[in-house]
Length: 447
Image 1 (cartoon, rainbow, N blue to C red):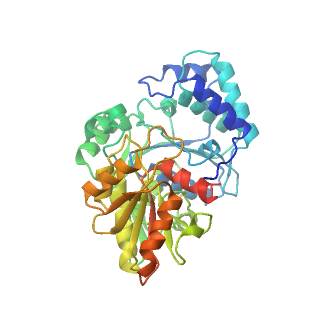
Image 2: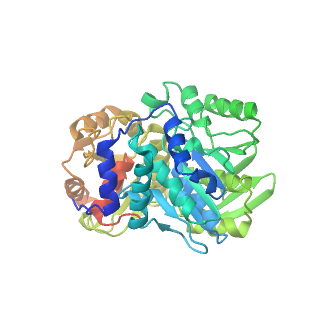
Image 3: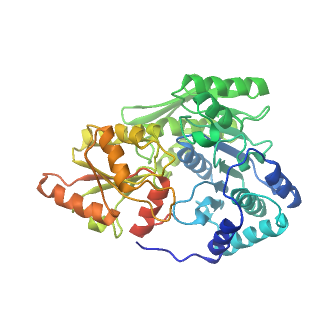
């Protein structure tokens, strides 16, 4: 396992993780008080697109960023969780370019400033680090910001934003029940908390009608103009092109650079949101964005690196952080499409944390995957033991076995695939935390 040495900023964050609770609390009082004491940096931000949802919010954030940067705009981006380094959560916009991850010095200074102004009062570490987002984004001029919710919406620390330019809620599914509620309606209500009075709200493709009903009810009660996927806008593939349509007309676009059919509706939601936020999007801008969009650990093709070198020659290796049944189905659909286009034996290397539904995740791959190898997640107290995870995979209907590491799993895949006519297709995933382990071990962290 290759470990990057913690930077000075990361050392400060690690120190805070030992001082302040990591929990999720049903209140915005502490973060609001801290931001008041900091001079309300959230009010000095450029127009904000606020993104929530169970699945696809990271991809939608990436699409929104690409659409804005395709116009030459400087775009700040806040995402969570990070994969390898904390810096990934804070992208500073640059006009005419793709922006850059925050410098270590700037991140450290903002962390220390937030801690100093908080003056030892009760707060969670994630509230402190959200305050860091607002400090950094207020200090650096930009044309727009895209801010992804950390957990839920209603009581997420990012929800101190009182009047974003637009709110986007991506597909809602069962996840994080211990914090958000035990029913799809309760979870949807938590996500709907980012819908603000009079602020345009875009709802991504919702497979759960009950969830959509909650979102629409919230928007109507607050007088927020809203746009529903399949009713007010639509994106689908036709003859190898992405067709996007809303009340402004039809756009004929290249398919997104992010693989998978699920990305078509994600792209459509981002287009509708960027337009709702008041930014121009025409066919030329959207085409550039579809070609240029990037998002690590979302059906990311790994082509080089120390782990890739261990796979059988000619292997096709994909990394995806999807971690619940809905995400598993989306990735499995993509694997099935790859299989139809280019048949290869599919092997899985999977690590998951204990707040997820592993059996529900694995069920999507029954009939697709020849073998699953289960691996623990480094530096995570919540990792599911590989033996238990292999049992979950077997209960779902897969052939599965535990492995001590990704290195061992790749070696065993090489043995099993030795007699195959085609080199294997290998899917590594099950958790964003596990995906981060893999990117670090492979020597290819996000930039």
